[in-house]
Length: 225
Length: 214
Image 1 (cartoon, each protein chain N blue to C red):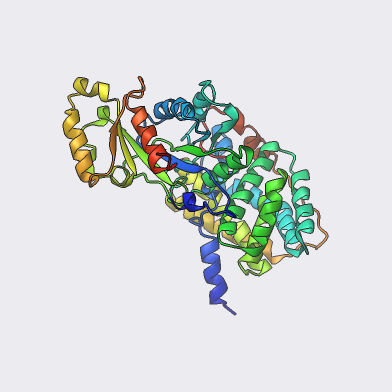
Image 2 (cartoon, helix red, strand yellow):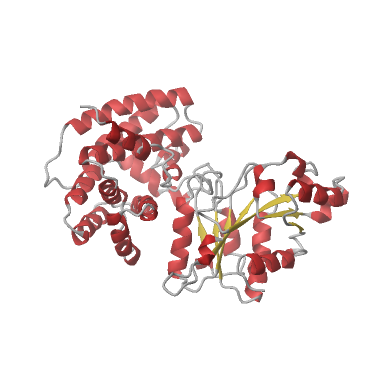
């Protein structure tokens, strides 16, 4: 059954205009392009597929689901620390925390109950505030279902990657829509299978991780990651 | 000015946030470099955030200036969207300002320098309590007449590089008069940031209108 209320919430929260700072994160697109590893739509589609299948589905989604099930802020913080411990790249960790803290900050101003409570904890511990964990907290505050929260998480990653590619001049606006459609189908496939509750987060995106990690060494840099 | 209204006993005191926007090359960073010592000389505890467009050059320039503790200078990447990061989605700048306040509890004023932009650039009121727009005479004396939102809506319009006016054929008095007219009489100040001329007038205005020190 089509739930108009939740669909409208998804349109709002999954919109690239939702003010959570997402436009400033390219998650490796800028670095891969600078290193000559991404120059057209086919390349972008492969990078998006890697991001989704090799990182988001096995890492971010697992963390989000664990944080979703967490009974209290102690349990949420444990998932947050797991996110910190399972992200080897310092720049990926930093990017994840910055993106998560930005999203959390918006929901604090929107008076999200869990967000307000968890923000105090994040302010006191620099290791906390990872994006996937915050997406679970804010999804709960928004009254989403877990399915919807996962969808927003995956979709905002996809739109962020495609948008960064457009702003970097790698693809045009029509190519971008074709990439989004292709990625949308992959996201739907991934979401069709629910992971086990005890699944541990893991990822294998070495080119993306290296591209992000090399960010601080680049003289020209427009994106946070 | 809503942030500054939080003066009752239970409310947290937060730093005033002052935006500095304007076109590329108009002298925003030079103004920041002049404002830092001028504000410090009046005993005002400050920090700085820069939004460089493609590098961290402005942030590094301020950090290396020797004018301020480098730890008090934060850089926020704009993702190629200098408008967005100060207006439609200022979240990352707000987080950076909140973080500076956490790290430096006594900070009273945070300067937020936008990346170089165009005349349509404006700051969100959720991000800043006061913002100024910097143009320069070498950009052409017709800039005020174009009535860009930056020129019209800023709390203060700064016309910089006034020393260049005779060299670029600009009638400075007319430019100032037209700027004041299009702004409905709201403040327009003239500076030569290379020599620090006119900067004290800006600090006077910030003390009076932002910090309420008169």
